[in-house]
Image 1 (cartoon, rainbow, N blue to C red):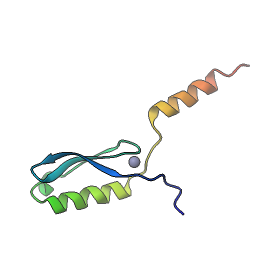
Image 2: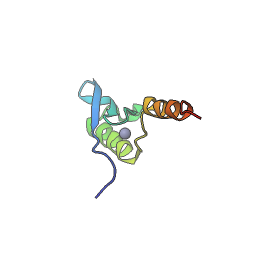
Image 3: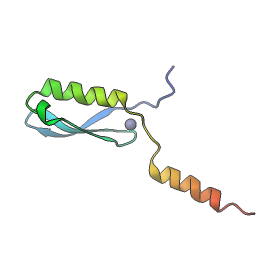
Length: 76
Ligand SMILES: [Zn+2]
């Protein structure tokens, strides 16, 4: 029932077994593990998942730019 598109948290980088950088595969927003969580893989994952669940996906800037160009190029 959710209007949100299907989105997934993708882990981009690990430090050892701990994910250090992840991103949303819909809006490409990046999430970084806080320094104090880097020693604990489970804490790091929980922190990223919480931030991921909270964030709002924004339309890609290119899409917005293209829409603006279309508006300004409309014949008078
Ligand atoms: Zn997103």
